[in-house]
Length: 394
Length: 148
Ligand SMILES: [Zn+2]
Image (cartoon, rainbow over all chains, first blue to last red; front, side, top):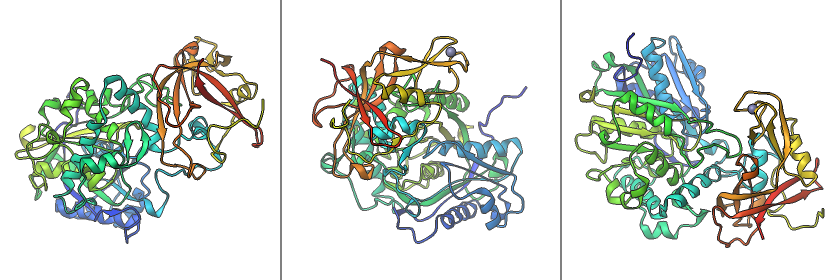
């Protein structure tokens, strides 16, 4: 029996995104943003949009596949897929699901995407609950535990308290994203640098580890990638970017109700990261650039630890700004500005940035980058991650 | 129990829904008792409530009164108001409390303390039942305070 793997079987042939807007400032409807990003990804790949035969998304994206297929005049829809879970836990999974469809022969040319104009709907960080809290929320909301930051904060408190990791480590994570955004004209925070003083003076969202700049913003926009069989990518305009490894899910009872996961102080990657590295036949030491989803900087810390990039024992020394910067830091991270400073497009912008790094066209290019890891949204369930590489890594 | 006791948070936050799966818990808190799910098949404690035992897959889950004491497993102190009822209020303290007498399951509640009080992981706490008699249906929340 042949090895069951996606390693080297598919490629990202095209990337696309809209202009990224501050929350509520998109002049275009959310569905129109989705269409723009998808068409841009097709154009980038040199593929007729009518050849697209599948769509994969996550985070309960409102731009559904059948409507997209009808709007774009798709000849035949062969794959439509929504990954369970909120936020960006499914960002890598959407690419993986597209890849699985392509590799299995269920489809030939699949878009993975995210479209978000939250301002046209409801606001994150504010309650959308009614007068009665249902399900898990019945045991949380009456105690004022409502927002995503609050859902995750006690994981961070416990992990950092146990390991003696200082808030300055999180500050470095935030500053790396803002630093890179200053040379990325696409970034919402372009021209708005972050200093240590500004970070330290920012207001508490939640003590003890969430200041304002530890938390993601809200944005409007859309991003998309086009996934095709590896063979096909060779004949397209751009240098191919191959999927080397990917995994999704969560460890034992990571979604146990009312904060009862046995391994609670976790971003939920212990098994996912192991499975991803196994498929990729690589480890963290092989990675040239890391894109690590920031919903909150504490989640990035946990994510980096669970993927093996950071040892908690040396986190205070390692997580300093200079180590995280392109082009020459020890671990260049979030090189386009990430969720914090390029755009909170639920991590899809990080997949695009990973492809740019491997093509050699990034604004903050790491010279000779061959392997890029994208760590999806941490602390939700299920989570997902992926590793991409150039032809040389096959 | 008095309805005039000072509550941990302002009125107006969502009230807990009390469907059949979780009703025995809410009935317990009304009577000043902390009751949680315990499997009649294998004896595992389980929280939050679920239809099946995660360990042995028995559907025969009972409810057991447990000692209303525990240890702080983790905590947070929100400042940003995430609900209109909290505007102008805060910061306030949320704790995750581990119950050593109930298989170390954890519960979420507020720690009754000053908004600047230091919070220590591992500190011993005891339950404080906070009735909301005027609600329809009425309910009682479980808050926590440092022991002794
Ligand atoms: Zn059982």
